Image (cartoon, rainbow, N blue to C red; front, side, top):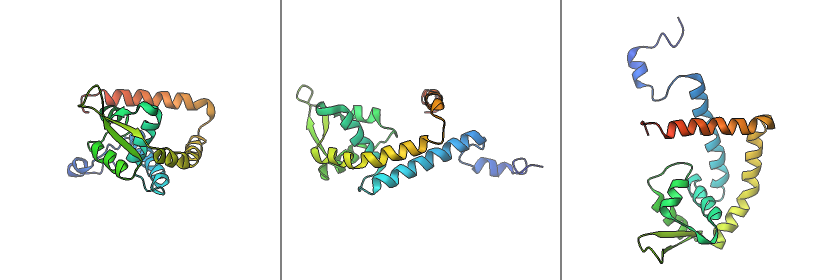
Length: 161
């Protein structure tokens, strides 16, 4: 008898994640990557979600982005985005202002201090990305990204979300 067949019904009902090896490997890998990058940004006093907001705002340029659009671009969906932006504002990394044409929207922009912080983090983040990707042959990078994107699209579009 295998270990899996020896489990009782109550054991199976209490397990929070699937036991399919490739799904477990995906979840473990995502967690390891998240922890690794969290360590990098924590050295600068940020959470991974705060770093993500700063990264998104840098990509938006001087025009900035409404909070709702930042939320749509986040790597991890978070209900506390307003609180995250408020903390970044308190730290002087982000500024917020009402949209002149639509007063209901709050537009967020990166401050010079926020940009400076990202520039300090860029070398470590780039190095970590390269090290993580180095495990795969370069010819497989695009294929791997496409497979992950396909899986994400399937899961994100599923009724369970």
